[in-house]
Length: 414
Image (cartoon, rainbow, N blue to C red; front, side):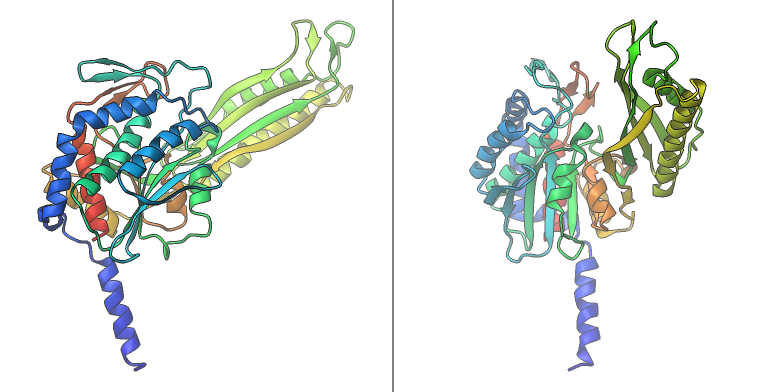
C-alpha cells in the first residue's frame, strides 16, 4: 500500500495541474447556453451597472451598494450568501465537489467622497458617472456571470465563490481581500479572479505592484509669527522633507515611484503652526525596491527634522511621527500557470487577440502574495478618466467581457 502513495499523489497532482480546454468547455450545451444568455442579457446587465453605480459607495461606506448586490445574488440563486467582518458580500455556487475552488470578485468602493453626485448619464453607448468604469462595470459583470451560469444551468465540478469586496481603493488598504483570505492558502483556493483594471478584455494583470502609504507629521509648540519668531516650524520642516523626497532617484525597471499626494497644517497666515502633515505614496514592481524607497523616504524625513531643529538652535524643538496608512504586497502569477494558460486559451477560443499581460495594483495583489494563482481581468467595454467625476465607459460589446469571464470560470471549475 505504501508503494502506491507516491503514484496516487502524482496522479492527483497531474489532475490539478492539467488545464481544461476552453474550446471543449465552450461546446458543453449548458455553457453554450450561458454564453448566449450573456449576450442576450446585455442591455439588462448595463441597467444593473447603472443601478449599482447610482448607489453611493465611498470608502468605508459600501453597505448600501452591497445590499443591492445581495438581492441580485439571491436572484441568481447563489447559496450561503453572507457578509463578513470587513463588509464583503459573499455567495457560493456549489459544484459537484468542493474542489477546485474558484473565487471571482469585484470591488464595491469608489474613490469619491460622501456627497458626490453619482447620477449616471447615457449618450448612445457611452455612460458617464463617478465610478461607472471602476468598478461598477466590474460589479455588473460579477452579477452577470452568476446570472449566466444560473440561466444556463451550468453544473461545474468545483465550487465558484462570488465576492463583492470592500476597501480596494485609496485608504481602504485592501481590507476586504485581507479579511477574505485570512487564514487561507493555495491549499484552500485554486484560483482567484478580480474583475477590474484592464481596459481591453484581451488583457490580464498577472503581477501586483506593491505600495506603502505613509502619513508624515511634524509637531511643535507653535506661536505668533512675530512674537515667537525663532522657534522651529513644522511647515518649514515639511517643506524641507518634500524637497528631499523630490530628489530621490528610483529605477525605471523594475518601475518604482513615489508621490506626496496630500499636505496640510497651519491655522492662519500669522501663526507658526503647531503641526503639519504630508501623505506619501510609494510603489514598486519589486518588493526589495519598495522597502528601499520607504527607508529612503523615512531618512529624508528625519534629516529634514534634524535640520529644522538645528536651524533654530533647539528653540521649541519639533517631533516627528510616521504612521503607516496602507501596505499592498507585491506578487505575481507565472505565465505558464494553469490559470494564465486558461485565460490564454479562452482568448483563443473566443477569437480574441492574443493575451497581453501587465502589472497593476488591484485586489489580486494580496492573494498573489500568498502564492494563490490570481489574475485581474477586464469586465468589457472601454473606460476613460477613471477616478474623476468625468469617468466614462463605452459599453459597445461589453457583454463579451461577461462571456469571457463565464468561460474562464467554467473551465477552471471543471
